[in-house]
Length: 248
Image 1 (tube, one colour):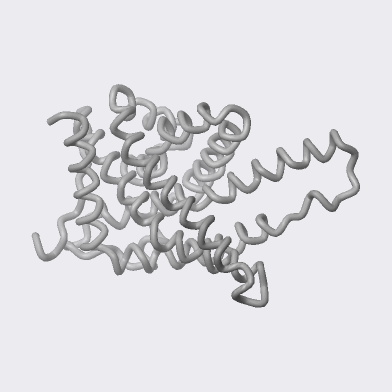
Image 2 (spheres, helix red, strand yellow; image 1 turned 45 degrees about the vertical axis):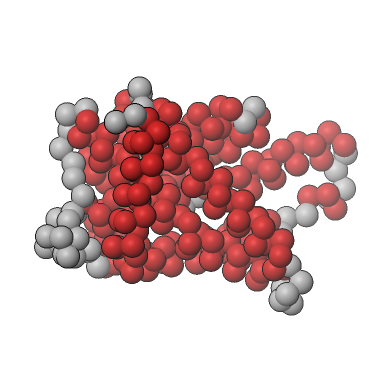
């Protein structure tokens, strides 16, 4: 199978997996992104231009603010991807684990650490030179599913992600980057369009960010999990998706 056909096939599988498991994916997304949407909206509200800094300090503050916005936009995606990895791969008689069961199984420490470190590295790379951020986004993008599928630590998960992506970088990039860019672009558009429709700018930002995370982040998470499972199996590991009850 050629690279293009492989990418199209992966997108088709992402769509089918999303449709089959949509109720559990969306319920989990609500739990994660309703509170995180508020955090991101608060970050968007920051008005650094009104602070009485000198020119140099304003420039530094601007860089820090852009970094913070980029980071908060990514925070939650990796944690959610890890939780989705549990939902899609944990043996459970064909049914997805309940939220309570997922909450009991999540490796909170490693997953939160990966989420924050990954977000910071990608955001810093995007702010400084763009390309390093895109490279970090792809090379390290499978770390969260790795934590929940192979039960590794933080450093081992990042190293394993790099190993899995090696020689498959273009395929992983062609799957993950368009989903992320489309979701971010539509979120920004929705935020701009909703300003003025409600009395509170904060509420508009919160609603737009949350709704589009609910719409698009499950696709990103499913994509990351499918790629991780495929590449683990391709490189000799043991990983598989749980079959849907209708196909069991």
